[in-house]
Length: 252
Ligand code: PEP
Image 1 (cartoon, rainbow, N blue to C red):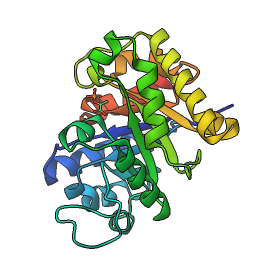
Image 2: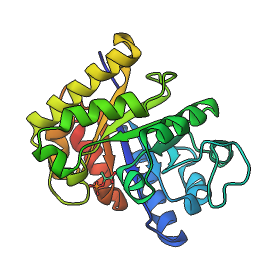
Image 3: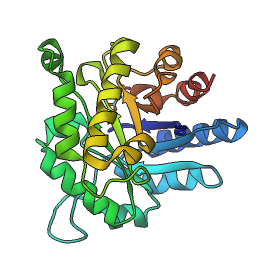
């Protein structure tokens, strides 16, 4: 089953206007100059969505947010709704990143609710899951991922509107990665959990990204694994050369 790779950048809480515009333009130019056979997604902070959208015009790079609220409008100070993201030109939103699960105490139930609202508004979701270092050491990685798939992924998820990102929390921003064998084992288990929940056909088509210290020098090994369908990239997405080199290396 051929699944087109997705190379997604999560800028997190980085960049002011000038820097964000320069980065988006540099990525856009590099992607335009090469005919990469993969999909690209950039997720800047909310403040830069409008500016970055303009920089991506004429490219196939999709625009995404890093979070979304589940309500359409209303009394939710500081939050952004799925309709607002659509209105800004987003086609994706990340949901349930471990930094939100920890910093904002987001539960699987809340993430599921956000995903349903995003899908209803016509947004695609990148739903993040992954174990802590302590859970890994206790041999609980697969159980944690299965529980997060069962709790966070809504019943309306399809291979079109949903992407899963497996991000071991201990690998995020640390320069550490699991071995390729471990990554493949976990991705295969995630696909099996998706098959149980959504059916085999959907699970076979759904993209499962790996995230956690992906760099140009490890992209090739990680992204050629049979159940790895792309990458969610934090730190390296802040350098246009590195972000695009990950795609180039992954497609070698
Ligand atoms: C992330 O936070 O989604 C991430 C994968 O970060 P990094 O690539 O910096 O580890």
